[in-house]
Length: 175
Image (tube, rainbow, N blue to C red; front, side, top):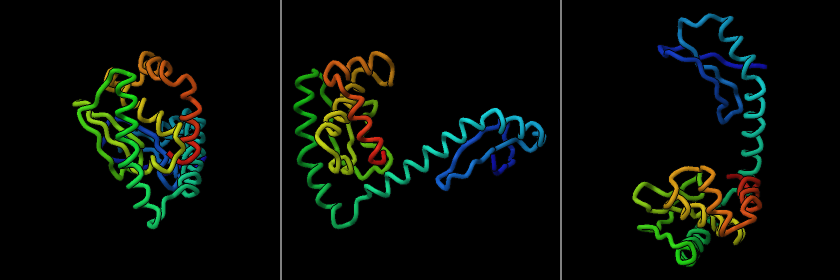
């Protein structure tokens, strides 16, 4: 496995895969080359999976990239559809956000903050209904559970038993 070592005034050793699919090992200046090599060998399988995942994500993202001419259409659709979907699912689930906002987030389709405000990326409007519904249900579930634990996913499954299909749609389209 090929990797780049970056030494600095840090206390721990770590491994990452950057957006160029390069494996980076960050190590303390005092860390021996043998220790770095042992660390790289220990995490080789993880790094290879992470590189493949990054390549796949980039391929999918490029395939479903939103161009400037479509951007306005998706923003308008998101502003029209997502608050209505949130209102619909809020009534069913008995969970209400403090507000709903449409953003231009690139790395996530939705988020729920500590004050129960929900933000959706306008990019979500490029996906099928099922995927949009899943993200709405997912973010509403965060009002009750601020984590991704067992109870959180049980709540999602209660309202969308086939939620894993929606997750696949979102993953395969580049999220």
